[in-house]
Image (cartoon, rainbow, N blue to C red; front, side):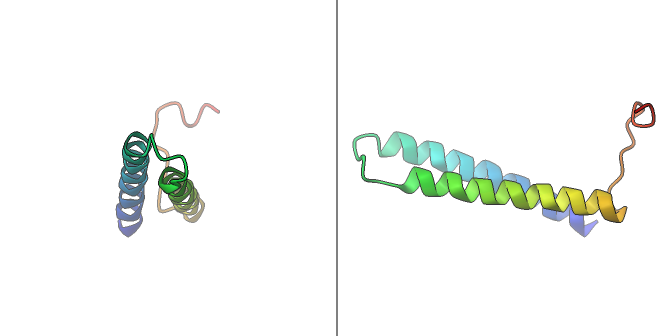
Length: 74
């Protein structure tokens, strides 16, 4: 159960980082030397990589499973 909580928190953090990058992009339009948007998007990429690793770990360890009806066809 703890892994599902971690996955949800990482997903929410990715969304928060993406929205902050949009905010910085709109806020710093007249300041070309500002790198806040770049840093926010870099954080988003790192969080997304952690999210993918958490999902991979969940499937690899058996904590997460696929219960879709079409899962056994492929």
